Image (cartoon, rainbow, N blue to C red):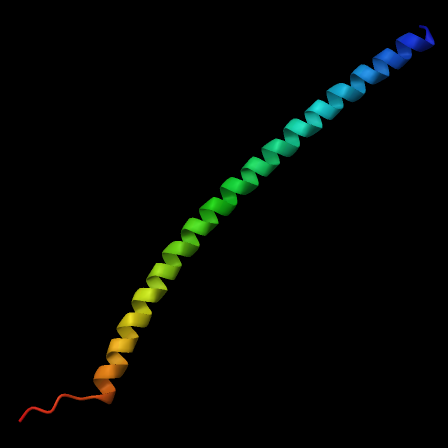
Length: 71
């Protein structure tokens, strides 16, 4: 095998590895983005639930601090 053939073979292998690496990197990025989007959805649900609880507690505090006087 000649040196030029070895160089071409090495170049070809490197290009293939580079492409595989790039594809894998893109796939990992995609998976991470999907995971983050799912976590953001969950956090939004928790946030909405916390807002609801805060409103209820706020109303309860108001009622406890300002009892109705029935005359």
